[in-house]
Structure formats: C-alpha cells, structure tokens
Image (cartoon, rainbow, N blue to C red; front, side, top):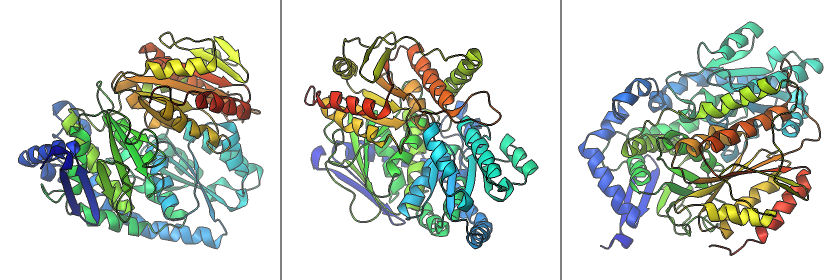
Amino acid sequence: MSTENRVEEARAGGLVVRVRGEAAAAAAEAVAALAADGVPAALASGDSTLWGPDAAALAAVRLGWLDLPRTSRELLPELSRLAAENRAAGLDRVVLAGMGGSSLAPEVIAATRGAELTVLDTTDPAQVRAAAADRLHRTVLVVSSKSGGTVETDSHRRVFEKAFADAGIDPAGRIVVVTDPGSPLAGLAAERGYRTFLADPDVGGRYSALSAFGLVPTALAGVDVGALLDEAAALAESLAAGKDNPALLLGAALGASGRNLAALAAATPIGLGDWIEQLVAESTGKEGTGVLPVVVEGANAPGFSDAPDTLPVSCSEAGPAPDGGALVQVTGALGAQFLAWEYATAVAGRLLGIDPFDQPNVQESKDNTKALLERAGGGPLPAGEPLFTEGAVQVHASGSAPRADDLAGLLRGLLGAVPGGGYLAVMAYLDRLGDAPAAGLRAGLATASAGQVTFGWGPRFLHSTGQYHKGGPAAGVFLQITAESAEDLEIPGRPYGMARLQLAQALGDFGALDARGRPAVRLHLTDRAAGIEQLRRAVGSLEGVSR
C-alpha cells in the first residue's frame, strides 16, 4: 500500500481515531516504538519517569487526571444537592470566573450539552460590566482558580462581590469557589463563608476538564456531569494497551508528524478546538519545539487542508468527523475526547522530548504586567507614540516588525514576514461578545497568507497559546489589537480598573515578544466599531496576495 493511501485506525470505549496518508505511516511507527518501550501501560499506571529525570518531580504531582473518571464521582452527591438548592431558590443563572483550563472545558461542556453558562475570561470592562449587570438576583458566581491568585479571576470576584452587596444580596449565598487546597483563594473563601470545592492538587489546570474545575460550574448550570464521567470511564480501560488504543494513536499522530502546526475543525463538540488549543499548545510549546493547534471555522476553511506544514485534524461526537482533507479524524463522546486528548498530549510530549506539565514562559508576561502597573502608578501606561494613524487605527510596532505607510501595506508586510512553517497570531484584547466581528479577521488573513493564521481573544490566549508564542519555535509573527474603552470599570480594592489592567496585559505581552525579537504590531482602535470595520476592509484588499 502506498503511503498516500495508508490508513491506521484504533477504536475503544466509543472513541475512534483514524489517521491516513503520510501521517498514518509516521503514527504507526511511533505507536510500535511506544508499545515496545512499555509506554502505554506505564503512563496508564502513572509512571512519572516517562519524560526524563528533569521532568519526573513535577510529573509525579501532575498525573492525577488519569484517575478523574473514578475519583471525581465523589463530587456528584454534593453537586446534586447544591444544584437543587439553587433551583429551589430561583438561582438559574451561572457565571464562571476563570481562565485557561478553568474556563475552556466548562464552556465546551455547557455549550455541547445545551446549558446556559456565562464565562468570564476577559478583562474587557464592557464585557465584565454586562455580565455583572445581567439578572443579578438570579445569579450564582463560580470563582475558579487553581493557584487562587489569578489576577483576572480575582478582579471578577471583587467586581461581583460589590455588585451583590450594592444590590442588597449577601455574597456568601451566591459565590462558589473552586481551587486547590491551601491556596489564597481557599483561605479567603473560608473567611467569608463561600461554598468551596477543593480540587485534586495533582491535576494541572489544563488537564482539569474532568475535575472540580470542569464539573462544578457545569453541574450547577444543569449538565448531567455523571454521564460525562461515564463517557471517560468507558475509554479509560483501553489506555494501558499497545494496540486498539485510540488515545495512543492520536498522541503518536501529533508527536511524530514532523509538523509544528495542527489545524482543528470541530462543529461538535462545540468549542472543543479552543480547549484542545490550550491543552496542546501550553503543554508542548517550549524549548523551541511543540505543536500549535490552529482553530479554524470548519473543514472547508482557509488554513485547514491547504496550508503547508500543517496537520489537519477534525473532531465530532457522532458519525464520521468532517473530512475536508483531514489526515486525523477523532470521533467520540465529549468525556472520552477530554481524556483521550489529555493522554495524547502526554504521549506527544514524550515523542517531542519535552515536559508536558510545566509552562516555563507563562509567568513573564504576568510579571511585565505587574511591573507596568506599579511603575506607572496613577499615570498613563507607557504605550508609546504610534508610527502612524489611519482613520480609527493607531499603529505601533516592535523593533523587528515590518514597516509601511498604510494599514494594508503593514498587513501585507506582516504576512510576508511569516517564515515557512510559521504562523501569524492575531491577539484581540477586545470584548468577545460586543466586538465579535473581529474574529472574522482570521479567515480573511488566512485567505491571503501562504502561512498559517491563528486568532485568540486577550487575555485568555495568554493562558492558552501564550506559552507557545514565547517558548515554541521562533516562527511566529504577531498582530495585537487593543482599543479604547468608553468607560472603565472599578476593581474594588485595586488602584486600577479593568481597562487599565487590560491594556497593561497587552503591553506586558508585547514587551515579552519584542524582547525575543519576534515581529509584532499593535493596532490600537480609537473607535471599536469603526476600527474593526476598517481592519476588515484592509484585510479584504489582501485576498489572493500569497495563497
């Protein structure tokens, strides 16, 4: 059989992984080597030595996710009681304050199972204000942070505490906390009488989909999370096997393809691509290597199967996954997909020779943000003078970014700066709801680009692809979008508001990219609607430039 026609398939526990073409040959070879080394059984049993001696200490306290289909069942009785209490009290709106793994998995679960869940993973003042003003008398806030010190989540908690108090509502009856034992948030929750769920400390944030972080907010929103655990448990029995192990085949396909980019198309489960993006990018993007998932609009979207050096991957819950040229197809229930992708990421980490449980470059942007806020005090943040202004768009650039005299020329220069096998990352520090049309920029830029284009909302991407941007291959070009806010939103107990924090986060990450010599441009919109429309027109003028 020719390499082009080769197909490898594994199925177990209701999950099917199918790999074809050149990717199938590489995956099969990797599966055989992994099985010969006893990796599947060792990983399923929690062997922390699989990623080398330097990673063993951290891995020893990061493999609890393997047991979650069983251990998380301990949460179900209390979750059922609390959900019933809330319903009886007329509390039918759940807001989740969380970042990265604390927000993306619950968002997927709720959307896929048809439950209403308002997710706050932003510092945009308009988006946070709208969430705090909506049906407050029917609202429960879940504050979710593994470390207990996440600045965005702490800010959300402060805003809602004030909103509840101003409305004459006791926050103790409305705030539920999910955190690790001994965290600052756990201590605060105990002092204030907040209902608290302590998560397994041996589970890292991005591997926490089936832990309290994924289950608490979605159970309160009305999801049958027991069924989710059942779906994962059905797959768990196959994880020790060297054959008929779809999660192993998936990990081999990711780690042995020789491609640093993987395009993801998934109509269902809804939002799964965003969760996979943060899991795989943050876990593998370090030491100059890794796999960067690129979430596209569908299997026919630009950048899915027509981008060089990209592994096209499609997912679905039932029936064959969308084709569209996909070399990897993953089909199965959401609970099984969560567990399979976590296992596959750990396998890919071994094949890539990196520690899939650390995130060495995440803290830098956080430290930059803190330093900017402290140095500026109450004065203006050091945003710098724009290179030029065109309409509602002010243009700023890093030292290594291309230069141009107009917006279209600048965008053309950015696309031209993307190296072979590289990508342009669009990072929008905007209101994910109010400024939703900005997301359409990805497809337009991808149509005009010979390389790959990703899109992320800031600051949530900092907890997702931010690690890869700084620790992965030096093949990224960056387009940051910031904007004026009509009105800031006070963060009680802090000397800055949401808009100031949002801009400081953007400038902090821009500084981290610039320090590495990454080409980066910041477009600051003085009028959001007009600026987004102006960008849309400029991108439209580029169609057909490269691809």
